Image 1 (cartoon, one colour):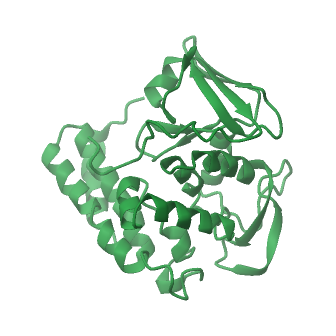
Image 2: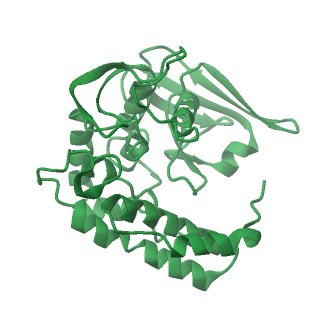
Length: 305
């Protein structure tokens, strides 16, 4: 399906031109929207306008340095600090999906970025009951520990987790300790907001082992699916089957990946590769293959064409 961009460009541009960057969360979220506007102009061949909006999107760096760089301040784990609508400074600081390369650099480089990312999850600062940081587990695919992304996608999909933060802007004194997704009518963590299916979509993507590296770019990171066999029917006889080799409850780590019989020498798949159809085989194991996903990593950047 092709989006009729030319029919809606005026409306999109008008909306982006009136975005409000007055609070830290809006500054990052609307920088993403501005990036998306630039990408749309690039797609329709309007190079000058594309550059204008992509350049404006890069202003996220000044907002990030002002409010998100220093995580030693006392309010960084407090809900609604600095007029945030929902979430904390810790939870919002990762929201630069269109320029993870720049985000890593502003964090002080790969080692510091990785250390802070581990601290975030190891101290249960993550909030799956709301959307500001649901993409953060996949950020490990841009580090020297891509296996942690595989672990976290599985953990938050089906395992018992500790959840301190909720969608009513509260930070519980006693944590929620249970599974986030359950096969029952009241299936979510208390106050969890699905927001037009965002959290449901996260579960579906985790289930098939494909998660968008940045929504708006046709690129997906790979993890071990929750089912031994999956079929995606594109219609007109075209189908992609996903098979987990050595499927098991404890086998949550990728050992190797093959697409149509050829070893995947990178940590991602493109929309075009997936829509070509055929068979994707994910070999799983109980221990991480710490070499897999280390070469040919896809890391978003504003410098990408």
